[in-house]
Picture: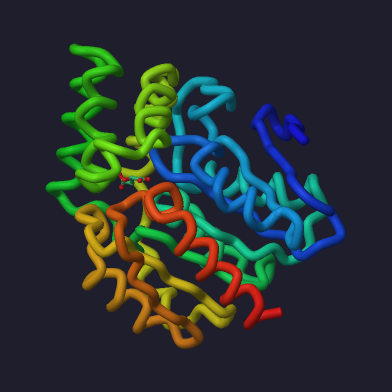
Length: 262
Ligand code: MLT
């Protein structure tokens, strides 16, 4: 079911009395990236996805986004839907949102799942890459940016053979450039959540694609080691977009984790 909450497109699947899982997608994607997980879990769990501000079918507004605004949106959705202590699952930019949300209000959540993400803020090199991305969108258009960025998130094999890759690539090209640039600015300006990692108390699952170059397994392993109640899993046959590239493995790992914590 689709609901508009604060203008954002929010999608709920399954029985609202089941244990809730709130999925936050990566950049420059939308809620569709979690379809394989929602399909696999919705009979057992109440699965909620949404399009982050500026992406998918959610509004762009003035495009002046911050990570804090993204967390405000997440909190607003939880409050509005009256979801009790969801499991929070975020990939990459969704992981930045999830980590900051946990730092701000850990008692809102029962567990945390981090896919292909990092706690560190952008270093100078990353900040300059964001700025170059914005410049490219302004001067050469969204297509050029998306055609350059999206393939860096996937394995060669996914690029050649995964229909979901092509669909995500084409969808991203339809997004409003103002929204894409707003997300780049929000990521560029986000705070570093590393210091909170060893204070996280909720059970945490950390997953990383074996060929992820944006948040490599060695970096994610050391992130997981800082979280007390955590487990770390390397996802075979995947780069950065693990839920799309190896959905069977991700779904099984999610189910094992969710079984363990309930
Ligand atoms: C994502 O997948 O959300 C992005 O790669 C995050 C980023 O650019 O830092």
